[in-house]
Amino acid sequence: MSTRDECVALDATDALAPLRDEFTLNEHEIYLDGNSLGPVSRAVSKRVNEVINEQWGHGLVRSWNDAGWMAMPTRLGDRLAPLIGAKPGEVLVADTLTFMLAKLIGGALDQRKDRYVVLTDAANFHSDLYIVQAMASRAGRPITVKAIERSALEGELSEDVALVMLTHVDFRSGEMLDLKGITTKVHDVGALMLWDLAHSAGAVPLDVEGANVDFAAGCGYKYLNGGPGSPGFLYVRKSWQGVLENPLPGWLGHARPFDFESEYVPAKGMQAFVTSSPSIVALAALDGALDVWERASMEQVRVKSLRLTDLFIELVEARLPDVFDIATPRDHAKRASQVALRHAESYGIVQALIERGVVGDFRDPDIARFGFTPLYLRFVDVFDAVEILVEVMNTELYRDAKFAQRNAVT
Image (cartoon, rainbow, N blue to C red; front, side, top):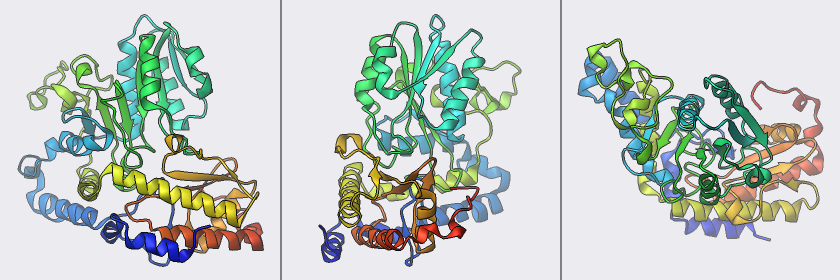
């Protein structure tokens, strides 16, 4: 079993260790919830203050031109593109994730008008399930949405399927799906593939181009550290641009927005998927958050992520044998950057940990979820977090009545 001294030694040789200083962190707290909301970085604070105090404060409306506000959705898309393996001109940053999915679902269904089935994962994030049902009901023809067990996907694929929408990393367990393999099987039956990359972008290396992905969307507030409610991103492969139509058209997606024409004419490229005026302050926060990624490669992040999660699993199993069911795959090829522990008292366990300075979160019905974000997390943090988890379990602190009441956000 790894010792604390060994963890300290790992931190001393960690190439990513200097990046921790770029974030505002509570040194008396171990933050294992970056898979839900990443911390603020110094670059975010600087960039947001620049927009508020200078561009908005002094430039006012002139900043739409002078500060390049109009180009921010596509400029940030190009900054983010390398993190998902996309090319310049294939990514847009504007609305939140669910709106991005709505645009892609609606557009994709219009491209397969002779087909009437959409496949998705029964264990998908609920917002994804809601929006796919809503968009299917507005498709102008009967569409059957089938929420299936992901293991049954291959048997459900047929020439009736218009679209398959899956989340690349399961938000509960952290299981990672085969991006390229599944996309290939979907294309083999003539269907389109839409991936939700919410728990993938900034967590694992992605290659949407190499996997021949049609469409993808993700959020900016988890591993990308863009802030609460940060704008999401939308990916449309180059070959689909000018073909796929935005089902939620708006004036800033118009080819000539300031001609104020009554008929919609889509702009070229990714600009066509902009709908209304984006939140410039929110875009500025994500812009600042992306600065740190210029000093880290996704390959470095992945190597450290697997070492951190391996360490956590090793220590939990050694110190608390048979206490938890580890829901996260052991296989590196199937594991993203979180570890999920199943226990009947997981909610109380998470609350007791938070009170003692270890921040994770709970997902119904029985998962204590811990995110491992290599940009700022240390190996010694993992060791110390397990020490506190052992204390909570051995003393049964989680049974305290104050931890029974559910918070609005778990």
